[in-house]
Image (tube, rainbow, N blue to C red; front, top):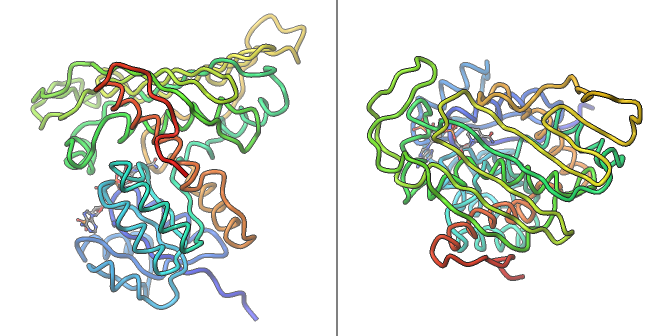
Length: 365
Ligand SMILES: NC(=O)c1ccc[n+]([C@@H]2O[C@H](COP(=O)([O-])OP(=O)(O)OC[C@H]3O[C@@H](n4cnc5c(N)ncnc54)[C@H](OP(=O)(O)O)[C@@H]3O)[C@@H](O)[C@H]2O)c1
């Protein structure tokens, strides 16, 4: 008898959902049984592109959650809806994929955490870079003591988030996007935690944050389009386009993370990791394990050098999540873990108010 597959409801039929649908359709243990969104036309478009037939299509999330055979909900809506969408799915006993950022404030995060704990469902947050081939290689090498014990890590999200992005209208506003570190910079904050821990599947615990914000794009009604190298009129960012945070971790590692929406260049995600027996700069390593080296050893791997969702390793993320569900174990990238990443961004906002270092965790319990 054929094994029955886990049914997936993809909610929010926009850009990133295309890759969630593809990954769940490719995984042998899952199938997309329903798609829901604000507009039925978007659901139809996603289903047609993916060649899906007989998939439930809804412009009502509550009804979609009742669709027969939904075991997993992929929340791909704008970030200000992630908390209520996640809570609704958890309350109905569904496992949840939560797109980043998980929520827009700490109260929402607490409510999500409580709902997920109560329901006992599995979660994964789309810090998809953890499955990037260079990230996987670096984590395996660090775990293998290639640079000894890390003591300083720097990661930077350098990306001209602007009106080219379908999600920009929500993301650019304080009420729906909050800040640059929340909307996009959370990828770099998560990578900082990931590389600050020596274990292959472990992220470090932040205990203190100090931050500055600045840049030049806040309130500016023009933006640079690097595809055409032209400045053009565009609705302004309502928050600072540049933030930089210093982070202390419980294992003694120090970190520096920035988000930079004002950079005039293509997307870049630089990584530097310093240990007491070696150093890593992007895909180059200097290690005590290679005593004869007189130049950087370069790792040929796919780098985190594209902002295009078709380039992101969602297949690895979803395969891992399905495996967690089938083997009844928690993901290293579950909601509880992702809260620690988001707390760095929320601590930065508190620091701008007080000018003082902020102690973490911000949420108790
Ligand atoms: N992990 C990653 O690397 C990554 C990459 C890209 C994006 N993301 C995240 O994924 C999320 C979505 O981003 P995106 O780029 O896919 O944005 P997007 O293209 O704007 O897609 C969002 C979709 O949500 C739907 N939506 C909006 N309001 C809704 C509502 N009230 N009820 C139901 N559906 C609603 C819209 O559907 P309609 O078309 O029906 O109006 C839209 O198509 C964001 O949080 C973003 O940060 C993550």
